Amino acid sequence: MHTASLSPYFIDRVSHVREDNVWIQAQLHGATARLIAVHQSSVLCHNHDHRRPCFLSHAQATAAPETLVFLGQVDGIAYFTLSIQTSKDADQLCRTHQANFQAYAASAPMLESEYCELLSLACFSSYWHSRHHFCGSCSSATKMSSAGHMRVCTSTNCAQQYFPSMDPAVIVLIEHADKCLLGRQAHWPEAMYSTLAGFVEPGETIEAAVAREVNEEVGIQVEGIRYHSSQAWLFPNSLMLGFNAKATNSELHLDANEIESAAWFTRDQIRATPQMLPNQKSISYALIQDWLHR
Image (cartoon, rainbow, N blue to C red; front, side):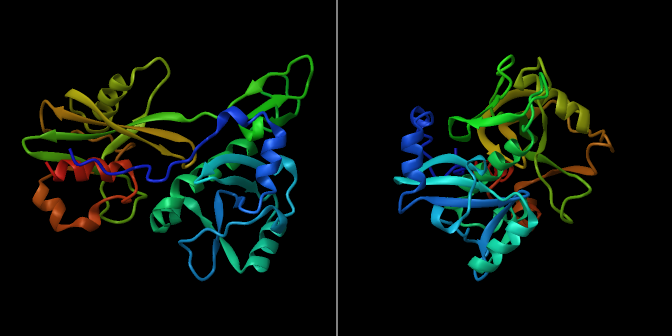
């Protein structure tokens, strides 16, 4: 099987030292530390090369502790998310560093591959913290803990702990008679097609979710469901679980609320129109490429 690399850059999460504030501070103030500035799910990138994030040192950023999250290390270099709270601060950073904030969801396909996992994680951490300032049990304020990998309710009578989480979703390449099934949603770029996907519902196995989503979207039954690979798709907080499956029939009945169109494609059709394929860094692209190379 020709499996595309979905996570080419290894982040050492060093989770065993997250509670060691002395160590975390030493990393933050170290000469090689890199801060990834995020504002409203956009990443600070160089004006002269939008593919390259503009990494900051701690000395280059006026950062309150509540805006910093330790992401981990890559080749011994410590990386942190720096959440920019206001448009005024964002504009100031852009002017100072000759940079601009790029919407990560739109710019991810153009970024150098080694940065994608880091920037995706940075955007996710900023997004998650921005939505957990208050306790869901007692409404008291929460505070950051464990180097940003937990929030704790400040009420001593509650002290509820909150941890970042992702929503599981399934994505599947379906085969039938030497063709694969691809679909598209109305808001996608014109003529782009992708594999079918949907979220796992509470109390549902991932295999059941595959069968249900396919039946709901295109009205067919599947069998031979096999796990392929996974990808953290943090736009803003999904974990994509990839599968292959075989359709028991080829007649499609589309749910217009879920999908604009769908069709069966041969390998030659896809190879002749590569522009129809999704983001090359996506698990959908990897599923299709593996099928093309069989």
